[in-house]
Image (cartoon, rainbow, N blue to C red; front, side, top):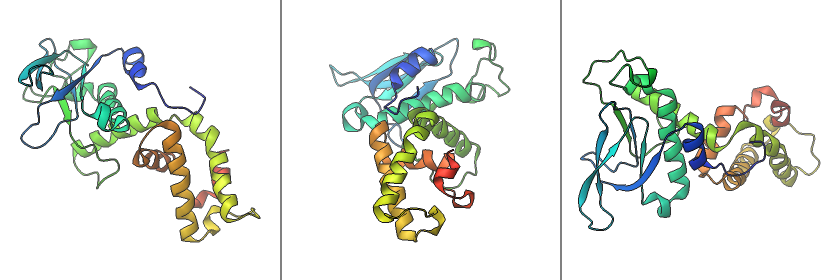
Length: 233
C-alpha cells in the first residue's frame, strides 16, 4: 500500500496471515479484562470462556492454531483500540509461534519449551511504549506492538505525507522558513510534534499514542540527524 489511508486490518489478518479472528465478549480473568487472545494450541484447540450474546451466560469457544479472539465491546467503544489489539495479536502469531507453541511439529514449527508453557497469549491493557523492557514478556509485548504499529501506519505512505504535514506546521510558527528542527524552541518542537502526530492519527485511523509510537520508532524526531526533511529523503 502506497497511498496514505487507513489499513484494512481484517483483510491483512485473513488474507496475508491466513488466519481467522472472532469477536466475542470475553469472560474476564482474575487479574483483569482480556482484550485479545491468540491460540498456539495444536492439535487440540484452546478453550476460552465467553459470554453467549443471546443468553448472557458463559460458554466455551474453541480456538484452533493461529486463531484470534477479540473483545467484542471494543467494536463500538474503541474501533481504533480494536484494530491495534487485533494487529498486536497478529504480531504474536507472526513473530512468536515457537515461543508459545506446545506441539513442535504443528505447522512446521519447532518448540524448545517444556509442556508446562501456555500455548496461548492473552493480552489485557496493551500499553504502548510504557515502562522499561526488562523481562522476556516485556520484550515480547513490545515486539508485537512494534509490528502492530508498522501495519497500522506503513512506512512508505507515512513518508509520502509526512513532509507536507511537517512543512505546514513549521510554516505556521516560522513563516520565513530555513530553520532546522533542532533550532526551534522546546514549545515549538512540542507543538509541531503534537500537531503532526494528531493529523497522522486521524489520517490512518489510529490513536494518538499509536501514531506517536510509530514516529518515534522510525526516528523521525531525531534532531542529531539535521532537519526532519533531511531525515526522510
